[in-house]
Image (tube, one colour):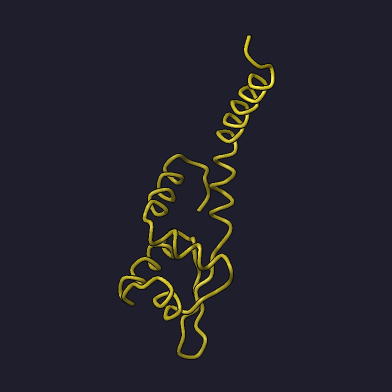
Length: 110
C-alpha cells in the first residue's frame, strides 16, 4: 500500500489505530510467528487474533506462509516505510520546532 494519496494514508492509519493490531506488529518485528504463539503472547482468543491478522493482511502490513500445519505471519516493511515517508515532512516541522526551543533555552532568560 503506497502513500501516494491521502486516502491510502487514512486507510493505513485506521488499521494501525487498533491497539491489538499494533501489539501484533510489535511481536512480529522480531521475526515471524505462528498464530498460536501470538495467541499465547497476547492473551487473546484464537478467533480474535485471526480477525486482527486478517485486517493487517488486508492492509498489506503482514504476509503469511504455510509451514506444514502452521500459518506463519511476518511483518511487511513496505507499507510502514511508505507511511514513514509520508510523515517525514511533518517530522521535519516538529524537529524545527524543537530546534527553536533548544536555541531559546540555551539563550536563557532575556
